[in-house]
Image (cartoon, rainbow, N blue to C red; front, side, top):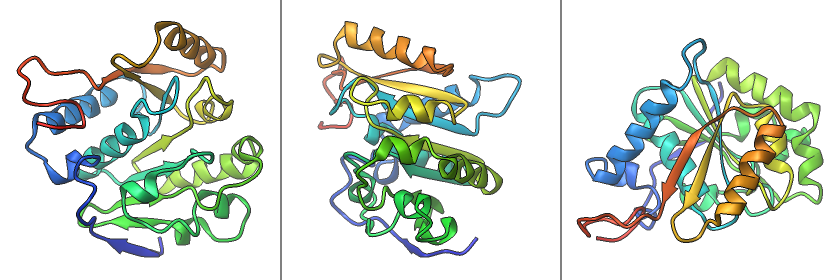
Length: 232
């Protein structure tokens, strides 16, 4: 595949990309455990397309998705991260990439898929940022072009991690869930309401999504050494 741009991630994103900057930290180890659990979540088929979402905003889904993608790339898997949050994208900030072209550019056929990819070195992690924000995210994500993009990506990558908007806010995540083999739900300790989590699960199951499990985020560690994503 043609490569558009590759770069090493600079300073400033250590807090978000802990698996990239602090590979020996307890948090990175937890992400590697999560990666292993995903890989063992299906016996009959290899888990290739995985959607990461949450009930509501600011629960840590995008950061979780990015770190999961990094751990797969560190394992030597050909990994693609897709920012399908076309309402409030953040991957271009997380990976310090430009967002002038991306997923929306490919879906509207302004650029070819492989030319819209950006690469995190030295991992070889491919990132498809959101691209310019569209007026019709749900229509784009439910289009035939989106299905074609996922199918094309599956031909070139071992693992595809898709970040989506929160489930209870808009229908986008439910649309993408139909295109992925499994869904990981991020739950924020002290923030996610139980009713919202239950509603999210029900909405996903109605689409036929396979929920692989949930990640408890922002949970204070007992030894007071680490906070999830955070500070010592």
